Length: 333
Ligand code: URA
Image (cartoon, rainbow, N blue to C red; front, side, top):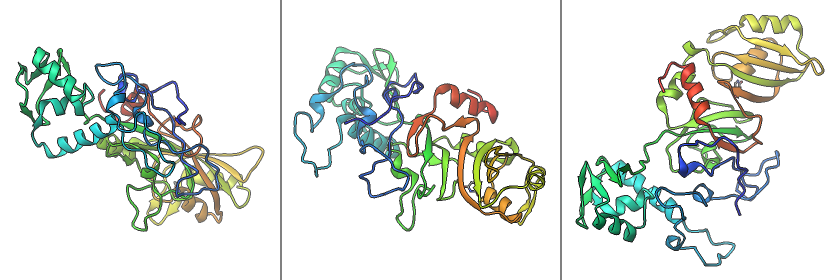
């Protein structure tokens, strides 16, 4: 069953991902959170149902699980498109030659048999030359078109927004084998988190394979805003809020000026917008003034808010959001 909640802003020019929306972290997964996730894990929905490349029907007959009843303990085998993507990724990384029909199948254009038909019909060009001979081998850096359209490549940039739950490590791997954010986001892309959130901090986290954008978003010179709601062990005094907003001396230097708002109804709650990203910064700022942070939730990172995502859910950023991020750090788009 597909547990996606489809959101209105998938990346519109990427049909492969256009069916994706937020995904719930599974209750049935190894990880058990106090935060009450719902739904079951969905390992294959990224490719489900949507138009895939040049043909509008999903490749059901190529799917080994199609028409078979799965034992509840049996792990569903990968769908054709997922296998293809893995295989394409490997091929691109190794740049080893593969048969043209396989390259076409891996990119999701057609099954190998259909690809052979396209080749013999003269629809396929490699580096600008029509290839009609079956069995020709190509490499990842060859430029392949079908009816003049370049076949999709996997070296695309991708951007996720996760509403991070508690007790999840923000890292690509964990030496103690604890759950990381990479266990939540199912993708073949080699993404990594943009910055850190502590294990018990929740909220907005961007993950991407765009190293340049990530690097700039974290660089202090761009003054990227991060808005947190902190729940303290006691009420924050206005005099302390004023000190924080001007900058407080920590062991790694004085913090940058920031915005501090004490919640009008609950003065233990503070809305804090920082413009730099030091390790454990919020906790250290409050600790410096004798407060303990009991809960910390990042509502917004670089103008991207998690307000429509439940904990453990994630979604792709829209093209508009990605462009806004790039604009903030002077990257052309
Ligand atoms: N500041 C902290 O103290 N912890 C976080 O996770 C993020 C900012």
